[in-house]
Amino acid sequence: MTWNVLYASATSPLGGWETRGPVVRETIVDADADIVCLQEIAPEQIEFARTGVPGYEARIGEASGVSRHPREILFIAPVALAAWAGLYRAFGAPPWAPWLWCMHALLFAFGVLAPLGLFALVRYRGPFRRPGEFCPILYQPSRVRPTAEGSAWLSNTPLRPGSLFPLQFEPRVVHWARFTKLADDSEFLVVNAHFGHAPWHYAGTARVVLELIARERPTTDAPVFLLGDFNAVAEAGIVRRLVAPRGSLRLAWEDAALREGPEMTFQWNLAPGFAPLRLDHVLYAGAMRVERARVLTPRVGGKPPSDHDPVVVEFLPVGAEPR
Image (tube, rainbow, N blue to C red; front, side):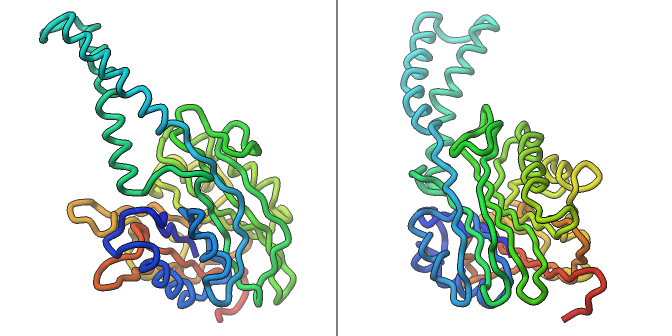
């Protein structure tokens, strides 16, 4: 199961985390997945992940780190506005020479559009606070046992905490864990990811993730599950770089013998006028078959607990009988 549960400080029609948290808990318990990967867990939600879901224990992983860009935007904005006003005073109203148009557009972007965009983002998701985001992996100890875990950052130095690619707005962390299935002592790898939005990071992101999988996979044919909020539709470059033939993984939704629920997973907190998107994915590799893939739609009074809906996928080894 994968679910971006939305930061505790984020704006939600259902209310605060004290209202949303119990709905998330009930949904996870009802789904009864062996493994649950959560994204957008803030420090005040860690205790929920660690002890708040009956029947589950958790590996929390490391925090993503905090972006320096919001502070830079707030510092640069008044300087850009002052320069913009100075240009206008010096050269008067348009028409202007082409270079002056470009200069005005650049200063307008830094002085007006960037702070407005930052304000809207903070209103929606909450403030950028240390130590950043956690991507915990919950598991049922009666079924599986963790044997190793670690974190990698989406950057050119993935083992350096808080690092990020050039022109990346905030650090992104990938949390992985190896597990042993108690029923037969078989091993598998779980990778919990929350990718960034920018297409120019797709190649680097795929490289970091595929190298991590190759390095941490228990054996060359052991099952691997990459789950998370990809911030990209299935047709986007990041997904296509991860799945065969370019990558080593497959899309569970496409391979599922049975699909239930809507295809879309990101519903904008059901805000009217916005088209829903399928941004949350489960990818896999190994001798597994996909029995069923579901998108759940938990609602209270018609309101969702998050802007994302959870995805649950049931796997069986090839040749195993359905449960």
